[in-house]
Image 1 (cartoon, rainbow, N blue to C red):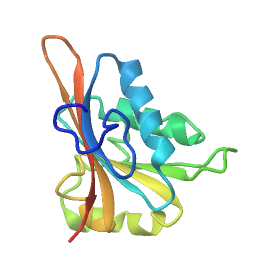
Image 2: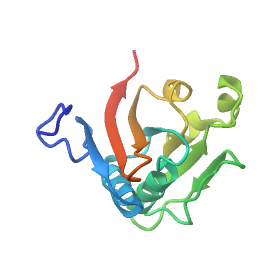
Image 3: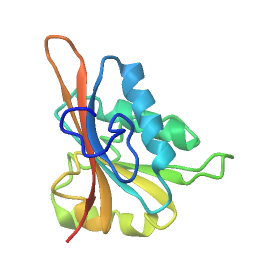
Image 4: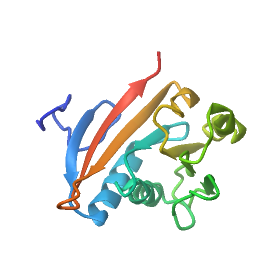
Length: 162
């Protein structure tokens, strides 16, 4: 069991686990996103937290690849939210949101993401403390980058709102 884990297989993010692992490269971060996607279904909310350069967009790119969405997944910083249609895989689409520039809950509400949650997976960068109220449960993923080695540390947990 990995230190800090709550399940025997804490190196893989399933719907019942929390855990942590190192992600040495961007490719590893994207691959971890694909692993997350394998557990996601329409209606799921994923909140990505971490400082600038921690790998949030790379992780979102991996989630999009794992879901098989159409189009290139890139940072939605200037447009706030980008919708990615589902591919031919029968998996849900993805709405990728960057909450960094949002002025508060009213602006988040204006995006009408709770409607999108019915048919898609919503991934919110910079969403901790803002987006949790969009769903009864969400996957919280925290990323940190070691400035000396560039290795990312990721921690994840499924959270149920009270």
